Image (cartoon, rainbow, N blue to C red; front, side):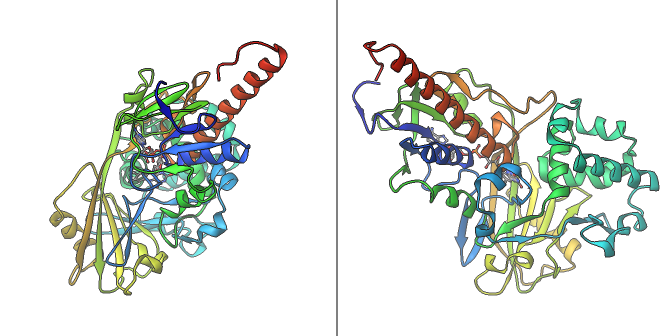
Length: 426
Ligand SMILES: Cc1cc2nc3c(=O)[nH]c(=O)nc-3n(C[C@H](O)[C@H](O)[C@H](O)COP(=O)(O)OP(=O)(O)OC[C@H]3O[C@@H](n4cnc5c(N)ncnc54)[C@H](O)[C@@H]3O)c2cc1C
């Protein structure tokens, strides 16, 4: 690029979400200079935590799963101080509720779903068979499996429509942010495996600690905030203020929509929307760290975050998180449903509403679990839209993009050594 400023020997990473940070950390630890350009006023992208009146409010309810293989590779999970939720859920119907827990973690509740009439004996056997298969098969087998819609997959396993509607649809709505179960069955099996293998929870100081931990591994000054990139090429970028910055390579690690705006070859997937409402309650209405899944669909899920992580509140009040699919602004129907679920909302304060229009890329079948990250020598792309729409997928895509940069730079370097006297590009 012309009229450039900056450090031309650095690799430029556009976006400081989980993918961009994972990529930058890998490049830095391989000995390369990196420069991360982030449009927002903080790192983390879709994983940020605000502190409002002493409450830690994640920007949309989300959880960390300790079984994500890439997270285990690149994060110091102990340092995150993850506060676990129960391995299971309470399924709340119009009037009745049932508890479905992983039996090897919560023996006391091993049969509670069945006893509460949630599905037939056969349904429960099917669920056990799917869970066992997903637990024991190597991940490569799950990734290579047949791909179809998740509802078709569950029916093909022999699960009844009632069990799908009462349990799987409401649970998966909270994870995939869609109720039609049109998501790829391969993605479903990978998620189910993580759910069965790991523990879900939140870092004691908020989900934002996860990207923060990665950013802290970069040298001071490596991340520039408030830097919106408007054009990219293999040798540099242009910012919204007209500045150009040269680099040895450029990795576009933005959300899918922004990646599509910067790179014509990127197909932008439809995005799923969700809205999270936060309430402060004088005391916990539940007294246990378990997700409540709403089978009526009025809300998607709700839980008392402070039952798992008391650090999410500074004054001892309970923090209740409730999500609904799509974009919502009216708190009243949500509070009405919370009154039915918890028995009271008296004295509750509505703290904040987070509508997230582009929370997750849709993953209909056939869903390639690994999309290319190398566009051409010098130009790369990563983000959850290249792998699976999850923290795990974003981290993997960041590693893959870093590896592609390292491979290209190494072969470029070797090429120059092999042909002495040839003009170098930079
Ligand atoms: C409400 C919600 C709930 C979720 N729940 C879960 C969950 O429970 N478990 C799970 O595993 N995953 C969950 N996810 C998904 C997970 O958070 C994402 O898959 C992951 O964080 C995506 O990371 P990313 O780095 O690919 O993209 P992003 O986080 O979107 O990061 C992209 C970054 O690029 C920046 N950027 C964009 N354009 C530009 C530009 N032009 N110039 C410079 N910078 C730019 C953005 O500001 C942003 O910081 C959830 C997501 C949301 C929103």
